[in-house]
Image (cartoon, rainbow, N blue to C red):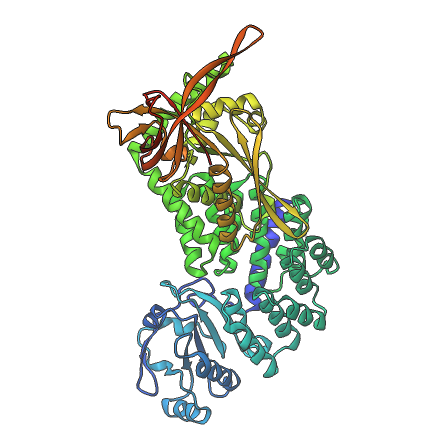
Length: 634
């Protein structure tokens, strides 16, 4: 069944390419466009390689004859006059007429884009591949000059050249797509296809009410389902799409809604239909990408990568598939390939999440290439593992100094839940959590246990989610990692909202000491990251007692205490100095000693592990001394 499905997908891809007129030989989709060096009929130099380096949205190569190409030539004139300076570049090649006839044609139609007599191009054997006119090639503005789309002959496809350009720019998420598709409708191109494309463009721009009206007018189940999906109404999206079982793109949207609600098996069945019935290559690309997501969620990263690459071959602008492939490579430990793929996605269409992932993978690559650091981490893992096992065997948690506050250290532990199905893109949960860790570490107000060290330690100790939920394990981990707080991150849905939860557990008491929640916009997660990081800083830093000991009094005006920035000490804080008072007895034994305030110290300088203080209020009858206790409530 799997082989049959795979062959059906391949057949569908071929059928779609044939439907768009994909040529063979050099002038084929996915192949590099030939180099063109010539002088056009107006005496202007034409160099395709140079035009591509100017990075327009698209380069259009148009092969025609005067008798067969006027309709398209006029529409290209509109595009050139409206966008031709820097966004769209058009090169038209006359294949039959002499230069005088081409000039007359250009003058009559007021053509100002490049128009070349084909015979003027030297060393161009590829011209023999042109067996039907007109022929239009869409060329990506990348160094390879990749042919993205091939339209052969007259017919309906060629008559819809404006819609085709609008569709290409929609795939790139260019704002000009809407104006061009409206011009396509006004010029009489297929009203239903153009209207549906307009609806998808409006959906991508977030104009959901307008999109819903457009889709409702032409009764597009796929479009209405897409709007519901964009609104986060997953149940409605699945139900609407289910009403059009023969619409491949509707089934793709249904599958995505099912995946985000955890129904991956049902989604896989819908994708079998979607991958073979999609009308357009970009729609099939989305279906194949989702097949990769299903494989990814099920733990088959190699199969997922293969699907993501097939999706990218169908639609080179599919940034979601590129991002997913990058996340899969990252999980597999191939950081170089992850960086390459994610950087390509960011170059095609930069967005908040992709840029976060690129930054993280670059940092991980630097760490992975640091041999000395790797040796140190491995040595620390061995030592930490040994200490953990000893603590676990003894069951004891000992500390000779139970007064001094421990450094403010947080360890983010893996979630017990499988959250990857909730997201449009693979790797979102990891990217968001690690960015929050980086923000906290960068604040200078606390330390976060290194992700690489923590992951390796958990692997070394073979600790799963059930063991991490055990209070004894939490205490032992906290002691071994010198972490006072363990943070557990989860994601879930409440209605249409995707919610992030961070639960904070004190490693001494194993009690929950705080929880932070935030709505996640996974396409623009920075707002959530900033909100959660800020709230965590406040919860962990404030409303906290700091306690320490006087470490040195050799300079009476610069008293040293044994806690510093790593513990949460800040310049300007005022600590109370305490002396041991009379014992308090009960039932014949001493249960405590009263603490007597004997003065105050103001912090003037803070280092990582100690602080310098100036006396501000001292009692003359009780001089301060080394080992005296200090305390402040924040």
